[in-house]
View 1 (cartoon, rainbow, N blue to C red):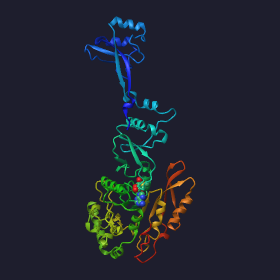
View 2: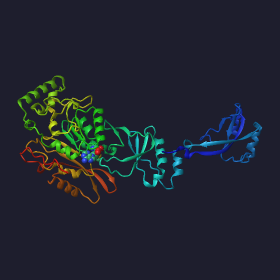
View 3: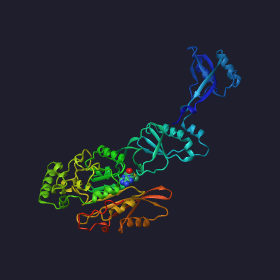
Amino acid sequence: MFDESQFDVHLKLWALRIPRELCKVATRTLNGYLLDKARIKPITEDPTCERNRLMILSEKVQHSDLSDIPEQVLDEMKKLCEIEVVPYSLTLGYSYWGADHLLKQILPPGVEVPTSFETIGHIAHLNIHDELLPYKDVIAKVIYDKNYPRIQTVANKVGTITNEFRVPKFEVLAGKSDMVTEVKQYGATFKLDYSLVYWNSRLEHEHIRLISNFQPGETICDMFSGIGPFAIPAAQKGCMVYANDLNPDSVKYLKINAQLNKVDDLVHTFNLDARKFISQMMSLPASKSSLESDVLTKECEINRELSKQEAESDGTPVPDDNASNGDGPKGLCAGAVVAAPAAKRPLDSSKEGSIAEDCSVLVSSKRKGNNNKRIRATELSYSKTWKHVDHVVMNLPASALTFLDVFRGLIHRKYWKGLSPLIHCYCFMKASETKESILAVAECALDASISEPIFHRVRDVAPNKAMYCLSFRLPEACFNEDSDNSSHPAEGKP
Ligand SMILES: C[S@@+](CC[C@H](N)C(=O)[O-])C[C@H]1O[C@@H](n2cnc3c(N)ncnc32)[C@H](O)[C@@H]1O
């Protein structure tokens, strides 16, 4: 931490003791020889006599005989009163010198003061270069002072990120050591502990861009969700979201954020390795009744009709706990009834077992206070993720491509409904690589060729490295054509 006292300067000055009623006229007479009033008040109380004042002379008056002051000025003073010269000690601290002045004094000539930093709630995230590390405390102090109260913690990233959760290590250099903060993005609030979870404010545009491709009622699987910058706004849009992250702290804040934004009934959270998560989401449930219940039965049709009527009478689909039973035909009936609140559903990954079994919940438009337009009952969709998922988000650019092999033979053609999912796989592209070479890596992982791939350049992360989003529809060749339900080829992969 920055030690302010290191900038204390002790001055030995001289002061004139004069009657207080003469201060005004003496100030005019001594113009230019008093301590600069813009910096410190040059007139102060006399501790020995309350009828007197001490007029502090500037640093340029160095001798007690006042020989540094022109004779004419001294004569004027002598006409006013008898002059008594007394020694005066003064300590000028950090606040006197000011942040910029200090930096100029401290930094070697030609070294630029870092002024830009990433802001995460009340935290300023610095990446101080090695050559400036000896000055890190004063740099942090200056940034803190200039930006307080907006900034209350200044933290510097230490070393490079090596952990799988993509969380940097930080050293708090100025302000409070509180790394729990709140960030707002596109109307959603995200709470996070910046020292424990991944967060990058520079991805805001990308989050918005991708979510703009999602439609209300669609099902989204987010394999590397972090604290929910895709998941929460997608749910706010009316999507059913299955969000997973390996970092338990990310999942903790994901849940908090789902509640904070009143979408906890649409965001189902998992704390698994992404490979296991997506395998379990898309592989077939163990129970035969779940598998066979995809035909809209008469009962379903009736429920659908009832639901329609309810929607028409009061405009709101009514929750029905029975609907959360995924095994029966009711649980499958698109738009028939509304699922129970998420808390009641056994969907959390903390519960070991088949996720797919539990993923037969209905998407509801009954939002708790968010401003989405209500979705009518007919627009509700079931969410048996082994039957249909609209989008899979894979934002782990350093290695997401290597996870693509999980999709080989994962989806069973026999049970899948509608189009294959759109995969949004983030990756880095170095100067030595091309879209073609990235595509080749993806195709090799899938063991299938990708038609109509879309590359979106997200941002430059280094002079020779950019982040891209590769979006494509999962090739038909990846589907498992096997009619035997027992095979789950993706499970157990390394
Ligand atoms: C680059 S961050 C993206 C987070 C979030 N989607 C975003 O856009 O800000 C990648 C996330 O993947 C998680 N992660 C890393 N390896 C994982 C794995 N094998 N399975 C699941 N999640 C993983 C990390 O904890 C981190 O939160």
